[in-house]
Image (tube, rainbow, N blue to C red; front, side, top):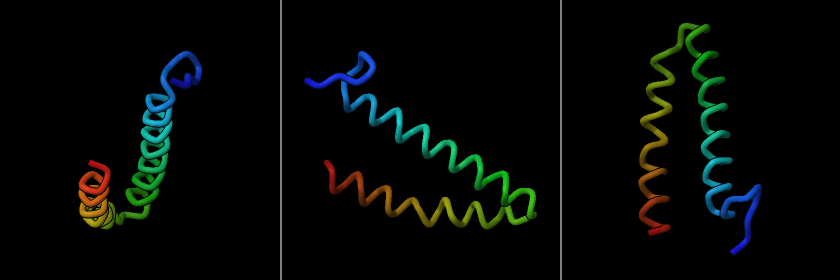
Amino acid sequence: MDTVFGMDAIVFWIIATMALVNVTGALLGTFLVLRRMSLLGDAISHAVLPGLALAFMLTG
């Protein structure tokens, strides 16, 4: 199995994706709170949920 930085490639991609999602979520959340649009952040998170559920169902 391929390794990246001493770990399995799939673990590396999981950690990289998690870090990217965390950074973009933090930036978007900060922007929305500063613009006093925090309810829009709640709506965005609920709009993304069906897509995540569909992705989990398709990938098994």
